[in-house]
Image (cartoon, rainbow, N blue to C red):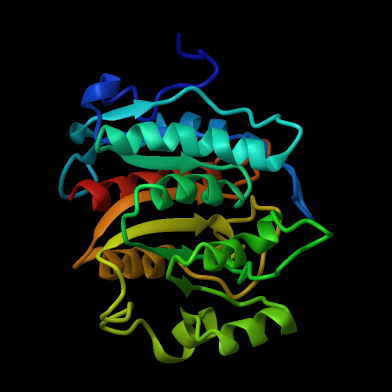
Length: 287
C-alpha cells in the first residue's frame, strides 16, 4: 500500500497510472550518507512530491502526465554499506527498464545516480550521461569514501559511460587535471556567462539515449538556496530550460534524476522549483 506520507507525483491533477501502464516511474530515494556540508537531502524526495501537488498539469504546450505516472514507495537506503543501497536502487530501476518505462529518481544525495546507471549498464545499452551540476564530482575519493557524492562522475567514468558536464563552477586541482587528461567535455558556468548558449551542446558522436542527472546546485543559489553545497554564479531557470531542450532535441531521454535538494522549513520556492524541473524533464522524456 502507498505510504500516505508520500503523495503520488501530481496526483491532484493526474490520476496515478497502474504500474504496468505507466511510462514514467517516479522513484524516491532517501539516500544521505556522504553529505559534506549542509544536510537534509533525505527529505528531498518527500518535499518534491508534496510540491508537485501544486503544479499545473498543462505545461504550456501539452500535458506530459497523460503518458502515465506511477510513484514508487520510497527507498529508505539504510543498509550498512552504500553498495547495498546502490544495488537496491539498481533492482528497482531494472524493473522499470524491463517494462520499457522511464525511471525518474528523486534524491537524496548525488550518489543515487550510480544505482540507476548500474541498471542501465547491465542492459548493455549504449547511453550517455548529461550532468547538470555546480561541481565536477570527479574526485577519486572524498573523506576516504570512493562512493561520496563528490565522486559520482569519477565512478561513471570508471563504468565506461560517456558523459558531458554543464554548469560546473567548482572543482579541485585534481579534478581539473583529470578533465584535461581524459578530455572530459563540458560547458561550464563561466563559458555560458561569457559566450551564451551555443546552438549545439553535445558532441555529434554522443550516444542517442541520454540519462540526465541534475544536481539542483546547478541553479544559482539565489534560485536554489535549499542545497547542501551552494555555489554562486549558477544558472537561471530559463538558461536551464534552453539547455535541456537543446540537449534533448535530437535524442531520447531514457531516464533521469534530480538530486541534492535539502528542503528549508517554511521556504516552499526551492521545493516547487525542483518539482517543476522534474515535470519539465518528464515532458522532454515523453515528448
